[in-house]
Image (cartoon, rainbow, N blue to C red; front, side, top):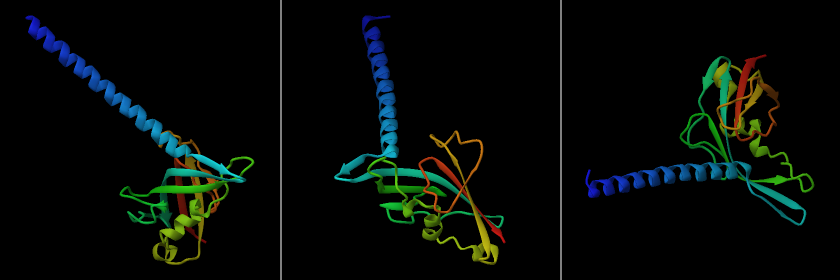
Length: 173
């Protein structure tokens, strides 16, 4: 093998190693940014604290045995909305925190009831009556893959969180 061929092989190998390093570096930065978005940034002034949030959750509807798909591209971008994915909730905005504990305060915009209202889920249309009971339950995941084993029952005022899988079951009374 000539010196020139060896030099070309070294250059190609170096470029390949550099490309792999750049690829994995970008993946690491993207993951870091995704985690920062999900955790949010806390800002306190005087005795008021807010947290910026960019969170997502999957949601399933069972309306008297019928599955429901949420409409796409609905809702304000600053708040609860959907994009192109089916039944995937998005929320981008600020929420209030308790000044002492830094815990998130109840926010109606993140309640399951708000999801029902914003997307106009009408039990009469699917169940033939509005005389239904609604059972809400949640499984949580940190990575949208490894969900809790069991469903946890929640009220309609539950503030959903990043990584939740929400199930709403409408049943005739």
